[in-house]
Amino acid sequence: MTQLSVENLLGIKHLNQKDIELIFQTADHFKEVINRPIKKVPSLRDITIANLFFENSTRTKLSFELAQKRLSADIINFSAAQSSVKKGESLIDTVNNILSMKVDIIVMRHPLAGAGDFLSQHVDAKIINAGDGAHEHPTQALLDSYSIRERLGEVKGKKVVIIGDILHSRVALSNIFALLLQGAEVKLCGPTTLIPKYITQLGVGYENNLKNALEWCDVANVLRVQHERMDIKYFPSIREYKQLFGINKELLDSLNKDIVIMHPGPINRGVELTSDVADSKQSIILNQVENGVAVRMAVIYLLAQQIKRS
Ligand code: CP
Image 1 (cartoon, helix red, strand yellow):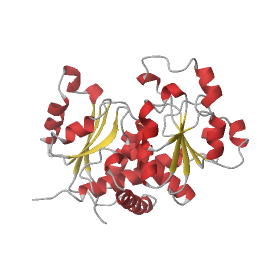
Image 2 (tube, rainbow, N blue to C red):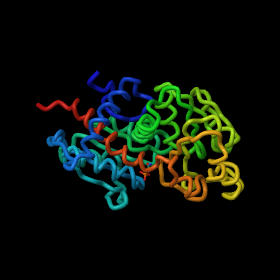
Image 3 (tube, protein in one colour):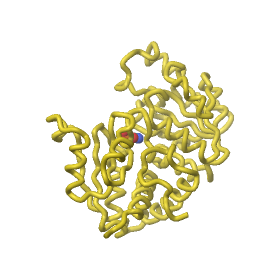
Image 4 (cartoon, rainbow, N blue to C red):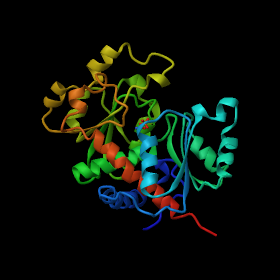
């Protein structure tokens, strides 16, 4: 297979196993490219990409931008905070104005779930979802699985526990879809108030006890408590959260094996992870960030191959 089965990357739920394999094989090639002295290829010299960020980002925004530059695409960057959205301009008007400047691909982060799907039905450009509310963050899940594959050889058969604020996490849902598609086993661990009721219907388990969850897994993907998305109190205090669901070095060293520690960032150091865990040899957090560039190059490259030039 040399083509993706989808025309946009809106969520992992729209992908199949072969799409993921193709993205990873393509990312392997680009990872080799970005480790060369000259880190750039001319593949997308005729492609223009707009990065539309309606919500804050460090890793995703910079990683997409670097991926596009490494592929020699022309890029424009839009940040809602400094735009005419502040004067009341709608999403469709904003995007149609940008598209009239002959843009081929839109990378969009938006606080509302489904914003990418909505856009894809109204505009004539390829859409890559860079995170939509608490819904999906497909390129994060792809780079997470790619990093597990790199560290452990394959994703199939691996036991992955996703820990923390699942309720407000787009990373959790995309990871669940991606990991199950590749044949991994998935459990969730966190306060019951932060685990959506429907989630076990997706084929994942739940473990309330952190030590049991860590003893079970090969990989722990630890999530941030997203205070900014919480309108009520979901647990009594940060102190209690740390005691029940925070990973420290003592806990890590008490396990009967070395597990892999992941985190999509940004980390609340001292809450979900202590610094000595985040910066330990078992942590692949910075490998995830490094791999994000190659994985995003692969996604952009594969979608751009579908663009017909008249
Ligand atoms: N992982 C992630 O999405 O980080 P940013 O919010 O900094 O992009």
